[in-house]
Amino acid sequence: MTVIRQAASIALALLVLTTATSCTQAEQDDLPVRVTQVPAEVRGLGPALLAVPLTDEATGLLALERFGDDLAGLTPARRHTQVALGGDPRFPTVARGLGEDRRDAVLVDGRLRDVTLPDFGYADRAFSVESNLSITESRCLTVTGDGRVGLPAVEAFCKIADRGGVIWEQGQSGRYGGIDLASGAASPAVELPSKPIAATPDGRYLAALTSQNPRQLVIADTRTGQSRPTVTVNGAASGAEFPGVFTSDGFAVLRRPVPGTRRISLVTPKGEVRDLLTPVGEVAFAPDGRRAIVVDTRSGKGRLSVLDLKSGAVTPVVGDGTERSGEQPARPAALPPMTGTVTATVSGDHALVVELEARQDPRQRVPRPSRAWSVRLSTATATSHPNTPEASEVTVWRHESPPTGAAALSALWFAPGKQTLTLSPDGTVTSAPPGTFPRETLGDGAVLHTLLAESGRERVDRLLVTDSSGGRVEVPTGAGPDQRVANVILTPDQQHLLISLRPLNSRTAPGDLDLVMIARRDGTGKPVVVYQGAWLVSLGIVPTSTS
Image (tube, rainbow, N blue to C red; front, side, top):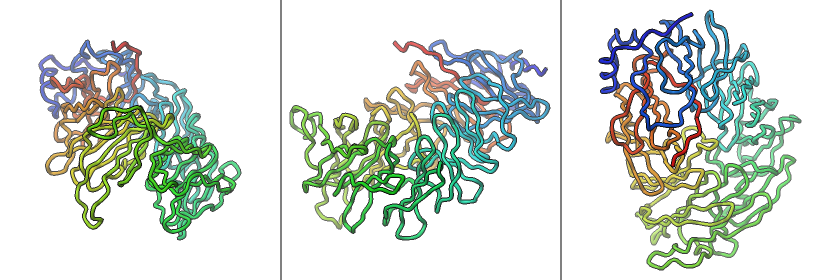
């Protein structure tokens, strides 16, 4: 049985703590190593699994009873394995046994569970979909927190759909299915005219668009194999730009049946159409398909309202009494009519709404004052956010890959100043200055941002953390120019960041540039290297008091 070699000397540990840069070849031979103990004030980190180099050809797995344990003398839990990387280590993933150690495993909460993976699935890049579900991309595998692993088909490719849900494609056949977000089970594949833009949470129904104009919404039932074109959605963009979402009764869509007319309709899987609201201005749908934030223009005035996508009920949004600057807070009442340009986005049960003052001259794109609110959709109540920047245009920030689950983060971008307002699923709103772009919500009202250098390139040496109080803190990562920030976790004590660094150029095994660090959330002090030459691939969380 292979045994991990003794850690490097104290002098080496001090060197690594001082600078997180590449090691000499002699140091490389001593990897993996615990460089220093986890600071005593860091709490709540439980069992952990590290992928580590055992030989030049083999990457193994070390099982730790608690993150921060020493590695010296540990016997590997796996001697040769391929781990699906890329997701949050708190979410499930898989490891395929290789070489002489052919034991496969599901990695959940820092523990190994023996499984037998399908022969045709790869353990490559993983995506965290929900806290209980991850998927791999090519040769798609679905992995649940209770240890279930699925493979929709031999040649299957999975992705998170732009408008919600997870879809899989059977090779390049034009046949698609959905994934049940609760069980990870795949629905049968059906033929569609284009890649689906959405799937229901149980994976049964898919929504797509016809490829030729006038474009129509197609809803497919994977259980029966039937699909049908429904309403025309002239001029609608595809993917993330498409204004629609699955509800409990069908697909809610913003359409324009007549030029100049905007209408929200509910389309059932049988093709039946029920109009919910018309005319309507700005619309942003909640990802869960229960509600939408809308500007109701039926009275001739733009009233910010919440539309129930099941009943069709329209509820005017009530403010907190501070909407008009310079006035004392009044009793809650419906917000004043929207007279300017409204932009909105939704995360969880909350919407972020910005109104730009109406243009005096439509031909000029000069910055204008703005007003902003966060709106709780379930109660149709708004909280105003003061001191929003002037802008000539406000747009919805788009993720490189669609967000899902509790980590979903929405944002609005102000031009030309390039400021950002972010919205977390819990309703937290934060602001970020120019030279940043949102990365993810950390929880506890904190949002992580990437910083940009003057050249426009991403900085790796520091990250920005913002919160709802207006606080902005730059946190050093310890990364050098040949490293990247792979993932960041807010520790359960809510005062530290657990940062994984990896080389810019991908490697098949952990090496000297692979570090697991701990930094203080308030940006003070230097980040501490806990492990070098290791990938943190699974982590359990231990409940802890933050008082």
